[in-house]
Amino acid sequence: MGDLGLTAGPLQYGFLLATPVLIIRALRLPAHPLPMLRFRCFRNTDPPHVTRIWQSRAGQPGLAQPVSPDLFEEYVFGKLHFDYGGLIFALEDDCPAGFVHAAFGPDAARHWIAPETGVIAMLQACPGDSEHEIARALVVEAEAYLRTRGAKVVYGGCVQPHNPFYMGLYGGADLPGVLDTDTVFQEALRANGYQPVRQIAVLRRALHDFQPPADRQQVQYRRRMLVQVIVDPPARNRWEALTTGDFDLTRFELVPRGSGQTAAYLVVRDMAIGNHAAGRTVGVVELEVDPAERRKGLATCLLSETFRMLAGQGFDTVEMNIPADDAIGMRLAEKLGFCETCRGTLFRKEW
Image (cartoon, helix red, strand yellow):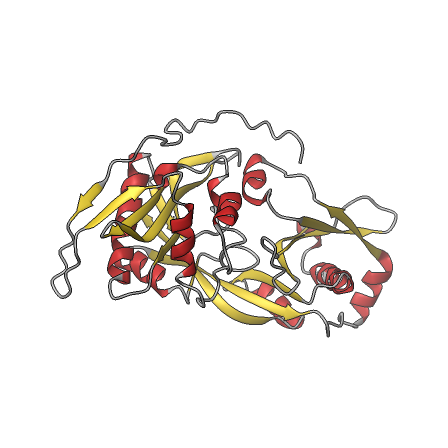
């Protein structure tokens, strides 16, 4: 994507390369007391531990599998805004039994992180009798990290633009907050006072039998409009480069014939990760219609033409996320034959 001007930003705490201090805290749980837990932050030798904990949840919907240390290096640890101090392990008998990843959302210019806006981007614990207690304790540790760096509000789960990590590894086409099937993560947030603020519907449709709507309006649009395709479009800001730069993106623009004015655009990504093709699935990550042209059926036209082209390229499934309270978006998805597969919830807490 060219020179992004990535220079030393305002992240004064930087990377914690020294051996982290162990934090020891006794949990007082009267019904089923836990053994002493220890907490420590990420070390360079820890990618296999993250991988093992993630793999222990195999079968849980929304978690990309199979995964490897190299995959986490590409999508998480190797990013410029990754801070060792924000990824915290819970240790039982010196063995990592879970981890939480606390990070930050973007500043107003979408150039770098904004320390006042924290994000608990991920939490996973190995299955077992103590998984819920470990998860609750990890949220407390994440909050302590975020507080020391100036966070005033914290989101539980990632939703654009508060999406610093884990796109491609969690939740489908885009990050949907915390999936409702991720009960350990959700329960730990609720137990620590987080409130749900938004629900995201995760939608899917097969492409092999897709037929564009054939009403008069759509037939006229297909005569008057054309779709321009831009492969690997340049990032519009640094935050976009940091969070989506690892993916194969394609931008589809709906343009009136004889005019250079874009009426609507759509950005999709190939959902294959590593060497695994995910069944040739493509994900919609952004859809925008010119405000002056909304409610005229242009989104239907653009999506229909894009899906027809993607099917011709061999993709067999398309996924997209829509806020559950977006009545217009949900009606459009239903019209195009999408089915809801699950939901995610974004949580929020202030102090």
